[in-house]
Image 1 (cartoon, rainbow, N blue to C red):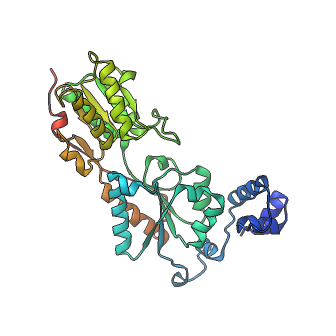
Image 2: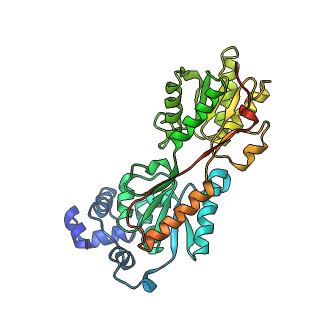
Image 3: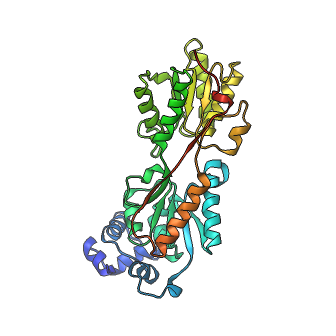
Length: 349
């Protein structure tokens, strides 16, 4: 077990200095450079700062003494409230944990990435496991993983050494393109969002990769002017579609593949406001099958993602990991299904 003394020797400072930094003691000032070195040493050496966390790692106490029945949910704080996709996943998690007498605690990415709050959040609150839907750094994953189990619910974590519950985003988008091609579409555009901090990295986002792969397999040309990166904002989707139509009235795609229903619905409004017909002038296909997609005008064709089941399965997985029933970082891919509605129901000749 790593001790304060080991960290002090590793960094070259006193044990009391290490203790003050870890406990966020403000009575004596420690310069920022030293603080950074100490926190880096904590991560690299795998220091576990309190007895509760040590017992979780070593499993030395009886279950009745160590169980807190608390699971953390790391996500953007507004996602479960404002985004129907995440709201349904959250409901699946919450319902499953509640039935099994677990408490779900919301934790923000900022709380984990703040070094002083990290130890308090993970250890002092007694979190037994974490569900990740917001992206956190690899170094943070590795550090937290030494103490408690993790389950990811997004493609960010597919190649990480943690359990992942997700659907095949690339395959889903390929299926959408293939469906549109079977309807006779050849001029197809894409609306989506990138990854990483500023959401600019569109080319490594799996839905976009699936779109590109399917277009190439069908021998269809990619038109850069028909590729829209909304940064996952509905207003960007609406404005970009407006601009696309007004700049290229004579050269528009006959169909738009959208990485989410919300992006599709915003773009569809722009199309209708510009006096174009959906699907006659431009067909639309979304992803997620949120409730409002069947009430749009026309109703939106989309990909049904088992959102509630993803949340429920993630909850079951983290519970079994906490209880020691699962020890391997399992990867579970849930099935998707195309839902064909009026927004794409027209054959091109």
